[in-house]
Image (cartoon, rainbow, N blue to C red; front, side, top):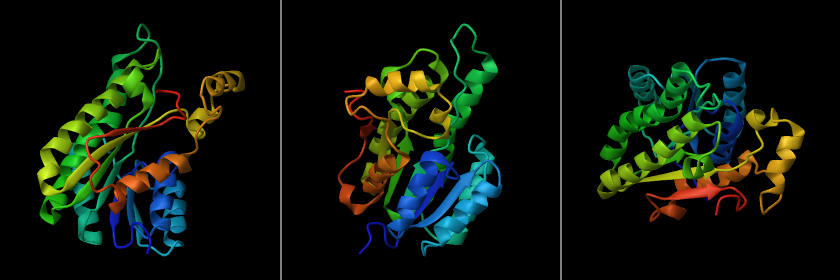
Length: 248
């Protein structure tokens, strides 16, 4: 039997990158997938087709994860269509990196709203269904910079650190209803975003990682699959770093 057979997951920001890798891995393990992204574009349609081809029910939804009312609407639509929510993966995120002296209020607010407020929005909307079910796994995508900080990423680091505090608090609030809440903190993962980093800078990063390479979205997806599955039924309130020992 597949690890996620009979389960339904919501994954935010899943048309590309780590979110898409998680969606594909979940689908391969038999999970029905409702996923969101900001726009209903070609990436969303292609991802929906790719997931459906794996033999599961899959549907993409255009959603502004940073907007409370829009999130409530889309989660309502998902519950109506899929009937339940077994796992919620809060993956939507952006970066607007710059030193604090140059950072604008807009750059701060945009990152906090998309990265942190979206986690509040989706968790609050999804918890109603999970509370009725008396089960669920909430998986929040943080980052190693949320644990250790990073120069030039004060907004991003603050948003990812906030996710960790939120994750631990929700684990305490909802544990009595058999709802688990955990965070994943990826390190240097090779995605479209990190591919834009100059090669010399990337090599410097990789040299500092004990495993001597960047991670893959699929390696992050493996940890998310563990947390969504019944293999982790007594794991809650934790932060699992996926960083090749970069942050120990």
